[in-house]
Length: 109
Image (cartoon, rainbow, N blue to C red; front, side, top):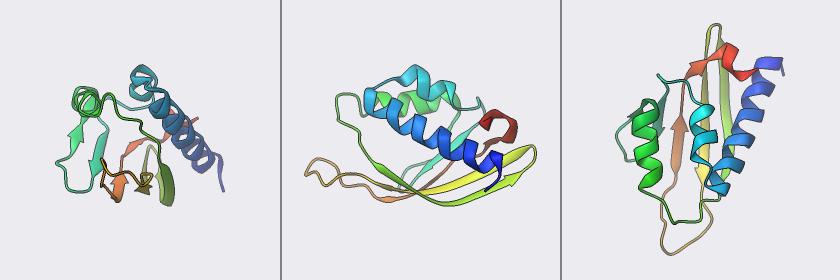
């Protein structure tokens, strides 16, 4: 595994931790402004404003998930991540699928 791939894995771990803590500022700080976040069954969220609006839509929920990284591709100066999202079993949440978000590769280090 090269340093860019490890940096992406570290970013995903930080993202998950910040999401569990409800730390929107940290999550947004991990994203490039032009990032596109894809969630199964939803339209693409493009940029900070759209992603922040999406997070506000789940405010008050305990968000804890396991991200199964399925693919990391680094194409300097960009990269692509594809990961499965498995929320814990809850009656109030039924979402499962793939997610992807491109970023500039040099932002992972």
